[in-house]
Image 1 (cartoon, rainbow, N blue to C red):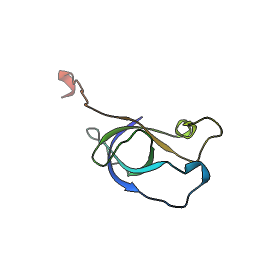
Image 2: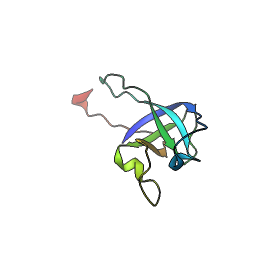
Image 3: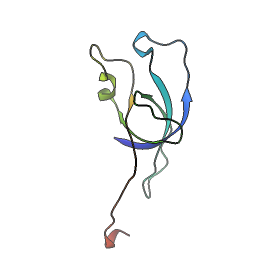
Length: 94
């Protein structure tokens, strides 16, 4: 899973039949300490996330099985809106 922030919307009036009715959002992954910045990506949203929300995203083949029937052509699916994040650090790691 990836944690990131929704930074935009994508509107597509013409798309594959399996994608009709789905909302597309642009997500910028959060940077962990000392990690390079990851590129933004498009994720399907069915839970009502919006610009500025911190979200959890699953990527890969698991995201394409969000409904009964055949897999649909998506690579990322928003699976949660994050309320808070708590990370504990040991004394030796900073």
